[in-house]
Image 1 (tube, chains in turn green, brown):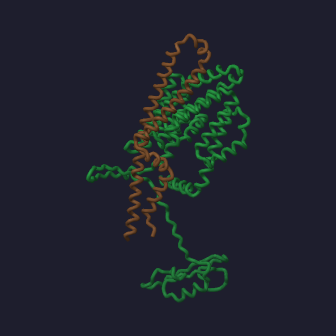
Image 2 (tube, chains in turn brown, cyan; image 1 turned 90 degrees about the vertical axis):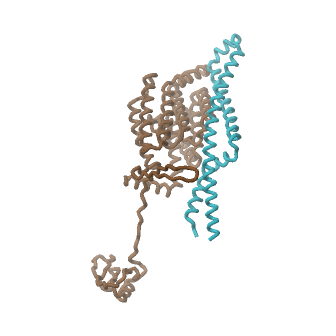
Length: 369
Length: 132
């Protein structure tokens, strides 16, 4: 545990030292990943599927708030869908607008979740998201996670039907729209996933707020189990084709991610829990205080025992005047002065301490320098 | 001379002012009823726009059958059904907004109360220093 705490402190120190550089760099990399994944998944518009544009937009996003990246991601996806068919872009714009005006009013700060969820869904590892959001977010995070899943399934519908839509003519606008809406709303996997993730967020949030020991660990394990159960039931009821082995592995990874998060956000020592009880004029207080696990920074004491500015001659003179324990420091290799414990190596230093100490000697050899 | 307690308090307060404090002060300027009313009105407008979008998509989706049945269907009955669904949407979303924004207002008030308490404490720390 000490090693982990040391590691945590080192990371914190590193972060606080290079915060000004690390945050824009992280934003740049995140923007690059989000927009790059969008380009690689959708990629219908060649004009915006260019590395130079990607780097330029990511660089811009690294200095702007996270909401700007969400805006660029929406524009990129709409651009790609527009290149495929205008109906897909129109449907996408309607979906974004509804999400924006209905749901983001409650959790505007969680725009990052709306981008991370489809990203991890595309990489088939989204199971950590509801658990992490339950641990660090609030009940409104269920909405953000749900919106992220909906966006992922919308992209999925567009990609799945892209070949069919591409073969249809411009006059079949209504048929294209119907194809997309049917594919999107008829996707039972999406409904199961949204339900599972929203319930997981709420369960993890409720349990981690309980006044019980190891609430964070219990919350993340319960969340992973509930997520699995809902996905399993959903798969049985609607034949959703969600990989249960993948979900199981995802749940294990989610718990590991949760434990790492716990190390940084809620590292407490339950063995030193104190329960105190007191009262004032109005209330009785029953307080349970759980100390945080911290590692005090090791104090480094640097004691200077030699100074380059003083000559060895001065030091020896001082030592001769001092009638007690003496410390003689000299720079060897210059050929002057008596050498004691000399090393043959030119330029090395040696320290000689005479042990002829009288009783009233003081331990103040620093005075010599 | 530097007062460590005062510096710590001021740092915490400055951090609060820079982050959530801004939004919370805006919310705190309203009376509870006014704040919730404004938010619920915004929610009703949002719900109306969202319902309009969904309705437009519904009409577009069923465009052919609409065109075929437009002269046969009872338009008043259809409009009544649409308004019923619109009412459900607005009421459900309005109630959820009411609950959500009431909770947010209460939380904000608590956090502002702590902030003002810290402000008083800071003031008293300055007072103590002046006496010395």
